[in-house]
Each structure stands twice: as C-alpha cells, then as structure tokens.
Image: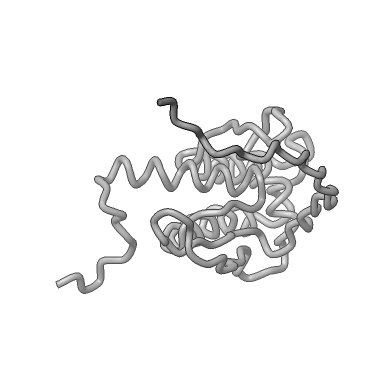
Length: 172
C-alpha cells in the first residue's frame, strides 16, 4: 500500500527522477512555459512553486541590492539562494542562446512578480494526446507569462504540376 507516499515515480530511480525534475524546473524558469506530459507537469508544479515560495517569503529582501541590505538580511537572502541553488542549476540557456542566471531570476524577477500572491504561480493547460504514443500532453506556464507570439500565416507556394506518369511498358 502506498499510504502517505507523495510524488510520482515515473518508473525511474531517485537520482534519475530528481535530475529530470531539476531540468524541467530550470527550463520552466528560463523559458516561462514548457510542453510536457500531464504527470510530469503536475509533479513539476509542486517543485517549482516551492522554490518560488522560498524567494517570495523574503519579501523585498529578495530583490534589493546586496549593498543596501543589513547583515541579517544578507544572511537570510544568501540562505534562500543556497536552498534554491541546491535544487536547480545556476545557469541556463535561453531560446536566443544567451546565458540566464536561473537563481537570480527566481530571487529577483519571479519573487517581485509574485510578491503578494499566496501560491498558485503556475497554470497547466491540457493539450491532448501526443502523436506516436498517445501520452496526454500539457503546457505548464507561469500565470502571468508573456503571450505567445503567433507566427504569421505564410502563403503556401503552389506546387509545380508533375509530369503525368506513363504506364511502364514491358519489353518483349
């Protein structure tokens, strides 16, 4: 019986599961929305929201410059940064190829953005089954993520008419 055993196993051992969730969390923070399976999105929500809550509980200390903080506030911020950094990697790569400091983004950008909000920082949108294995897919994003820029509809190029196929003739 699995009474009081929270979390999904995903058919993986602990280190593989933790690595997968670390990478999903880092990608969610870097790109602000990712597409994944329903089960992974639901588990990712637990992890990501706990990390953001650690930063938002600091209040203004999270995004104030280090020079303006008292020694006690510096210690609180450093402790929170180390707790967040113990789970996710420090650096990520954005879509445009630039390096992103993920921990600074959590501590400065996301904590300021969600300062007055008591949880519920992410939204899961069901996308339907994945082609190939029919796994249920979802889009997980921060609730105030910038809208997706729709690609302009491109006019389809007319396809040149191919030569009509002639029936093959057999010799002999």
